[in-house]
Length: 183
Image (cartoon, rainbow, N blue to C red; front, side):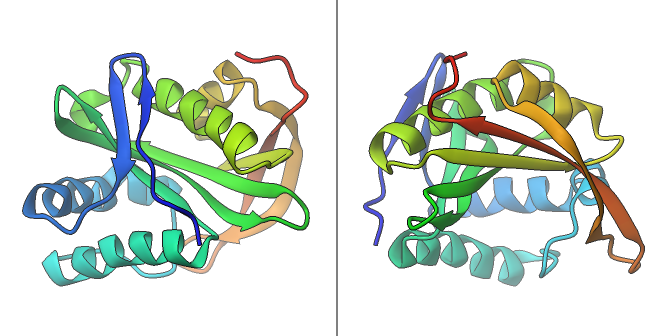
């Protein structure tokens, strides 16, 4: 079990997702955003209030299981996005990061600030050594965030993900090690 925590980043507060009307509205907007859906093929699509209720409970379950730490990213007390460390493997001391930002909050460095905070926390507090970041080839915004946060480009994973139509997509792999210089 992971003990839920709050983190701070410049101008941001990161806290576990809550099953409140405000969090559900923000999550529903983020998870149904066309740009999010273009680049992500979640196992279960979130389309309505019931789906997002299950999604927020899934974030809390990840903390309880100890394999996912999922944060709502707040700026000025408003949810602006999401950042997480998932697929946490304590034996391999590894995990995978992910993030998204609401359309009106993009291009303000929110994803980078949130990712830096979660990365440092995962290395310090969880004792992880390697964090991976994956994005579809062509998702240049996500690539820039990773590079800005010190996630080195490691290569292309051929046909590593399927889109919702069943078409295989190539994925760009980045990784950051605990021994890498902080960014």
